[in-house]
Length: 171
Picture (spheres, rainbow, N blue to C red):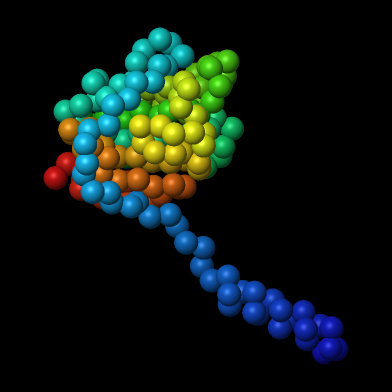
């Protein structure tokens, strides 16, 4: 083995040792504060609001229609929520411009989501929202039946983590 090949092999080993396993995002449990007030409109004119989700645990997923991780999480959330129905509400909020309403409707229908997908209105990517600053998609926020944030996760989380977070929010 020549010196150049040995150096390259050593560099690969060092990089591999430092990189380790990629970490999956975790669902962070939040202290239960005051109920969050929100209202987002869907392209069809329906409203996704704090008032029509109170009384049940609610999972809100903040997405971008073009983002593959958002699409994956939207489908995953749909599968998990179907197992928890009727105990759990769900909705997605697309952090898109209002003129992107047709894309939001295509997102919902092509993924065959059972829950509403709304537009973020003036609350958008990187701007303050009732849920804090949203600077990464997908971002999942779980509310208890009183509308208080009890968990939050950024990125893709497993079905098991979703199940666990929804069950914890119910207690």
